[in-house]
Image 1 (cartoon, rainbow, N blue to C red):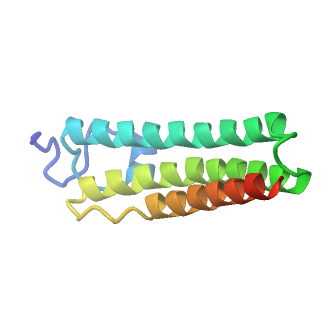
Image 2 (image 1 turned 135 degrees about the vertical axis):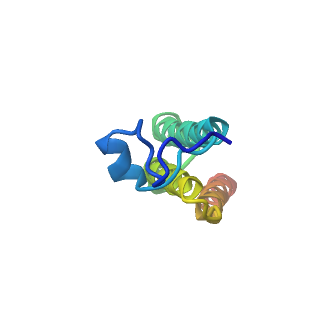
Length: 133
């Protein structure tokens, strides 16, 4: 663990922006903050993949899916990617605050929502392909 530069718990190296976003507390071990950042970037990559999947379905699935199924699936994936990108930022800040304040890390509802959304999209795609005769 890194020594606390300020006995009051506020990190003397942090600027006003960091204090506003992260709040009071001690600077966590850099390895934990960097791992949190890598996880955030993995969520962002997943969000970009969902966006790309939505664009690909809208652009290339014309002969395979009905127009309603194609639009619905593409829109669903794009919206899921958009929400995931926003929520992953919130998750990153929440984890960083918890580490700084020596609180337990909160559970991750993002994974459940993502799994449900992708499962729903895959189910819609499977039903659309199976019924497209």
